[in-house]
Image (cartoon, rainbow, N blue to C red; front, side, top):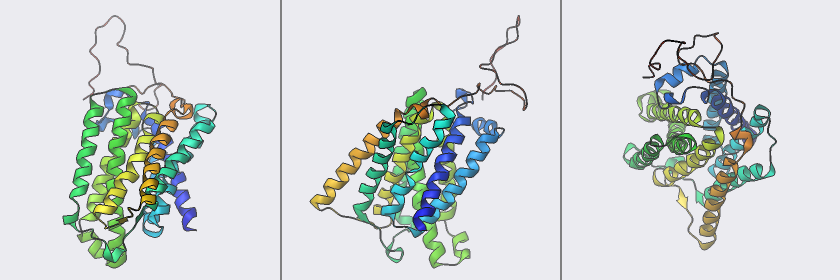
Length: 315
């Protein structure tokens, strides 16, 4: 039953990713990292459905992290990429190729190999105190570096770099989720409300969500989703070792397994990034920056004939 719930979480997450990106890419590219991107998407029913589906998946993922062994939960949750591929097929009109499925399986296998090489500490032995969290700040700084690099680029490079940043922030949120579930299991609900982890979790989740939507807006799904899927568990594993005292096994066999896991993870990302099903999702016309609800969309903003008009204010 636990495994089934974890797979349902991955299914919902994959469906949510596809539905959100399908809507976010229609918004003007000038809305990248702007609040107007979110306010524009709030008028898109498909995006709202995608957010609701992804939220349900994230809630089930939080449950899985607290009830399923990490070595099993993390690779199962990365199978959301496989479900995203399956849903993208009817939307794109492209056939699902064996190479893309193999890439998704390789990515999940790489995460599994990295997960098996460590043992999670028992909740009673976990550190989890605020003083043990500078590693999260370090990961956030790395995410900021990827974001700055993405801001200096366009198209697929921007989507990939921003996707890495989003995945790293989601990894921090995963660590905060783990700490929050530990508090819920050992203390009262009042202790949860008076502690810092739930509020940091909300903040990290919102930042990750904002970065994810911006990466979806920048380019087709194949440029961002593999990066998000790969970066999130890596950040979560690092926090597991540094913050929660997870034990990494350093025997020659385990080191070889970890090396194979890293290679598989990179190869999986490359294979999935080439998937036509994710790169050729059907795209309706781009949303007009000032388009009122119910008006037909146009491919681009055009000034009225015979009148010089400055482009719309996109601030």
